[in-house]
Image (tube, rainbow, N blue to C red; front, side):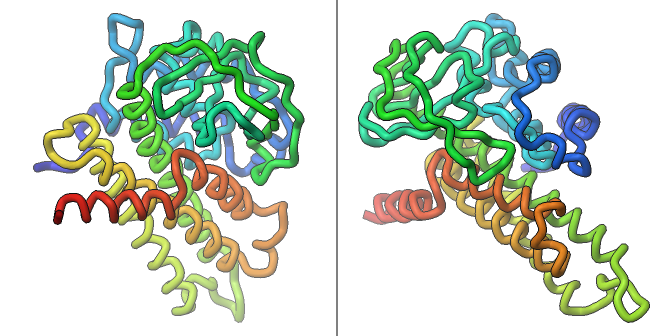
Length: 327
């Protein structure tokens, strides 16, 4: 099998990269803190096809595979694009206006029924809420949502709100639909974490080449080289697992979708968190300050790590899958 991206996929990757670099420049990321979602830019992303990637052509979508969606979400993660991007993409088939960018859709995966408290990202800005329960997919319009209490978020670009209980919502999908969306969300979340891992590596590489100590770039020191090498290995491993999982979701006959998606999220989460921490270390004393980019990588990685299952839950899922296979 040939695991290299073809020409169309490379073109899609470059298009997404150029768009994100122009609209979400990492060097000016501090200016994005505390700002609401720019509806005009959100619609630009919709015009680019971000939210319609997985929607069939009959529904006005691009009808692409999970691999192509992962290519785009890798770039969205690398540029720390804010907003419920993943949830709006998953909701495109269920919420009118989500694919076109006219409606911003958030989402939650409640584990304790409707009982709260429940935390919702971008709660003050969403037009609808997608709820993935074990028994199906549910949608609640803004008018049916409870009031949210704003809280201080981990990531300054990801505001959150708290409510005491979720509404029941209208069921739009069954248990199998919910399972599929959960796996797609897991892989695309892994792709965003992969993007963070890559950006943390790139920012560290540039700093190591520019920052001089004792008259030479710190990148010439063996200790720094080892740190960068470890960052590269983690990123390469995460990339392999993420794209392999996306390929399995596109063609379940080539592997186990549950095990592949769990492994991708586990490895990509580890790569993003460890690379963000290492980026802070490479940047030295200044790396700990909020003016520098590495802390944004770490905080966004923390947020994504706890969406669609954390490392422990995915490690348990992989172990249970292997045990079942051997039984």
